[in-house]
Length: 629
Ligand code: COA
Ligand code: AMP
Image 1: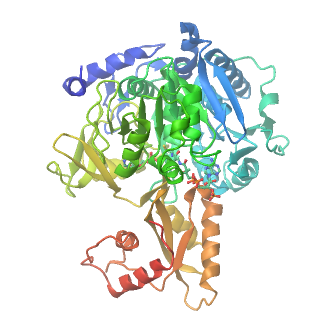
Image 2: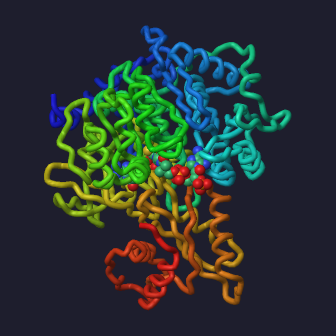
Image 3: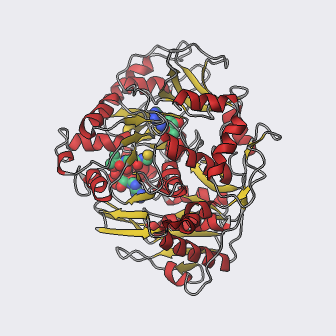
């Protein structure tokens, strides 16, 4: 059966398609139907079924004879350690941590925040929550205390699981002081914290609140898996929106298992026992779906890599991992390949390793530029597949389903829609546009299993943010084109979200931070093109009248402010002082026009611009920043 048949099977009878896909899951109570649309536009999948994600990701593989197979291959060039954890060992570790959490009163539906580096304990913690039916929310380690505090106050966790430190090349990131500061800032502090002490740098524990990871689990009985309803949340993952308040994407348990299992086999083409490596971070959706849950649900071995594509120690790092662990499928962001290509343009490192195990490379997180894609194809000699998805969807909206049929690869396109997704390109009025025309990309409701059910305790924000612009559709926030063969090309965001090194960031959040600087009267942050990271944020600052402090000082302070409030991950290193910002007559700042000027792209003078001469001033100011794009 080819792609067209599979897609038509879904179109002809979605209910049958997903019920059949659900057969790959061990249910304690099998669902009687796939879709429940009784509360539309809040759709629920497998809602009358019950199952446990940890059981499906771990225990059933032990029962099924995979106990001695590696579940996790931890490879950490930054600490010079490697560790293999079998499915049996993983089961023991997860049951023990879950038991300790249960003995401290954690029950189904409770929230826990996980603020962890890329260590196996991060996956153990996620699975331990899943085992109890508790809802985890992983916060990426590169976020500052303030961002963590915002998430604590939204999720109101009973406990936080963290580690003493993370390790970035050349520096140790002390997590514990950030955690302490976040808890001090938060209005809803957790009841307790469990801290993994790493040998690279131990942390001081707060008596009465913090528990040592090992001591915490001493002599507590292991926990069994708690069945949860198909629509019960497995996790909340915060992602950037247009404002400083992140959006808590709610992932349902049942549909998530079904969709990820389907994708492992049909999209990525892997089988139980295969080694699958997503070189991302547990703090992002890719880490949730394809470092933790997807490969484990599929009975694969997942690689957990604590390192970078370059500098740990060199541009051959990825090839070493592939050859040492016999990786079959690699998934990463194009920026990682741009970093490798920049340091090793001829691919000399590639020839030093045996890459015969590698069958395909998947790229996502940002647009895969054809140059990088062709370089990867030529150097690796395997299909390089761009695929498109979002935190909200949890798995690919479009791609090239190599497990079904490898379709012709079109450079610059993110492939064809996956079953479950009826993708349309719409004009401003919500009318579908003909093939080859650029427009807003929307997905007809209902979204398939595994996608977000709502935003955490913010149903109205979910409706307003995604379901209102185009009636009957989910608005993706991306603009693009569908060609005559049904291939999608994703061109840009339609909102103020930017994509820096495959990380999704809100320019609005950065503007909120900059506006708090005492000398800043008004500001704008735009995404400018960058040859390595795809985009970089750039701040334009208008100062208060009468401010005569040196501009260079204010720029340094502004950069520091964003790093302290949002975190190093924002990569906010470019700012410039300007006299005025270009606006429409109604007062809307023309960010898009400024971004085009920064990227030296042609732009139309907006008809509603208040004073066009400002654009020349902006162009002159931008020149002083030495943009690298
Ligand atoms: N904890 C603390 N700090 C972190 C961090 C973490 N988990 N992850 C990143 N940071 C810091 C970095 O140290 C860097 O700090 P600096 O300003 O002091 O140098 C900053 O955040 C920006 O990080 P990053 O954007 O990752 O840039 P980089 O220069 O360190 O590395 C790449 C560039 C391209 C090598 C890197 O971005 C990469 O590997 N990207 C892959 C993208 C990816 O995994 N995307 C996920 C979706 S698939
Ligand atoms: P995130 O939620 O962090 O995964 O970011 C999702 C956003 O990243 C999407 O809405 C797109 O803007 C962008 N994105 C992800 N994958 C691709 C891709 N393959 N091509 C172009 N943009 C992508």
